[in-house]
Every structure is written in C-alpha cells, then in structure tokens.
Image 1 (cartoon, rainbow, N blue to C red):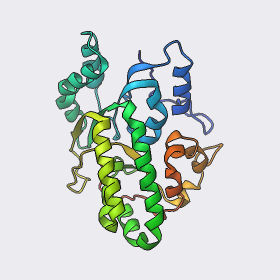
Image 2 (tube, one colour; image 1 turned 60 degrees about the vertical axis):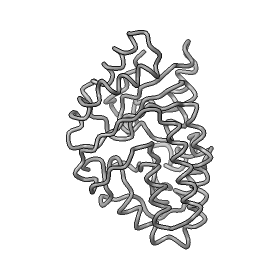
Image 3 (cartoon, rainbow, N blue to C red; image 1 turned 30 degrees about the vertical axis):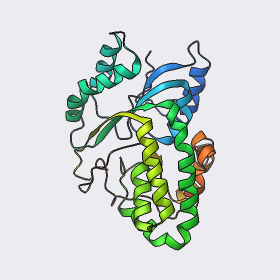
Length: 275
C-alpha cells in the first residue's frame, strides 16, 4: 500500500501533514495493524525520534536522514522486486543494487543515503543513547568549551537548516574532543548496535559543503541548544513539550541533554547540502 502525504499545505499556522503519532495510530487502528516493511520516501525520516515511534508497526523500514532527491527510481525498483514474490527484506536489498546509480545522479551536489533497518533492533539503540545522554550531561560542565566548539563547527549535519546530526558521528566526535574514556566505550557500543540495525545501506557523497568528510551515514538525532529547546515549537505547544512526548525521549531522556547544552549546529558545520 502507498500513503501519500507530500507537499501538504499549511493553514492558519497549522498543517494538514500527518504527524508520526497520527500515522502510527492510523496504522494500528486499521485492518492491517502491522506491515512487513515500510518505505519512507520522504526527506529526513531516518531519525531516531520518528523511528522510535514507528518501529513497532513493521518488521523493516527503509529511510534516509538526508533530503531525498529522487525521480522515484527507488520506489519503482522496490515495487518491481516485490512483484516477483520475494519478501520485503530481500526485495529491498535487491532494489538498492538496482537504483543506487540513478539515485546518486538524482542527488546532484547533495549527499544522500538509504538505509534498510531491522526494526526489532531499533529499541536496542535506546539504552546506548540513554547512556550517551547521561554521560554528556555529567561531563558537560568541565568540557563545555570543546563540546560547544565541536557542536558549532565540526559535527556533520544532513541539512544545515534542520537540527539533525548523524548520531554515530556525533557520539564519535564527542568522545574525540573530550577524550572521555566512558564516551569512547559508548560510541563503540553504539557502532556495534548500528551494524546490527542497518542491514543494507547506500551512501552518496556529492556535497561540496561537507568539508571533505565522508562518514558512513547511520541515523540522525535532534541536536538543538537549550534556548531553542525551551522555545516555541508550534502554535499550540513548545518544542520541549512536543519532543518529550516522543518515545525516543521517554526511553533515552535525550531531551534532558538538549535542555542543558548551550550551542547548536551552525552554518559552519560540514553539511550534506547547501542551506
């Protein structure tokens, strides 16, 4: 099945776009409350916050953490494979091989990615992210200068206008700039679990704004400063209120870290595309 929710209009400060909460509730209340696989053919959906709420309704997910530049090659390839009668996982792996060259061309001068995720492994990322959040809060007072500088200049961002960072790159960089042994262990454990969660990936490195950085893209996570976190999030709620409603925060207390840190990524950060 296909659910189309692209380029929605906004009215009176609101939006008719589906939130991740609405989408999950709709699926759970439908006649098909669980899927073999879901393909988010949308920009920026490869983030821990969205996946943290959506993973229970499917066995596998295809998502990307960058802006999605596509002429639908990816969807066409996946449908062709599924029509052969193969399971979703096998179809997705074969489709990746089929469309990766065309999708790379479509991305132009932007970086991009597609990840096939094993949804049962996603919640195993939560305790590691909780450890990362807790440790960052503990060491921040004594490492404020290096953490703030890295956040504003050195952390890879998929898109400079949105406050997402690559989670693995973020953990690795925080461990590097602080030299904290516990953070290094957390980053290592995160990578091991990422390798279990991401079954197949393709990465496109076309951005001239990435400062030569070519990380293995994983999943993204929100990274804002405490002023933004406590600021306005929408016409009826604050950023903090909305964020702490998501399952990812409930499981990891990631918002507690966002409520403390004083800096957020800027236009100086290596980026997957131009602002």
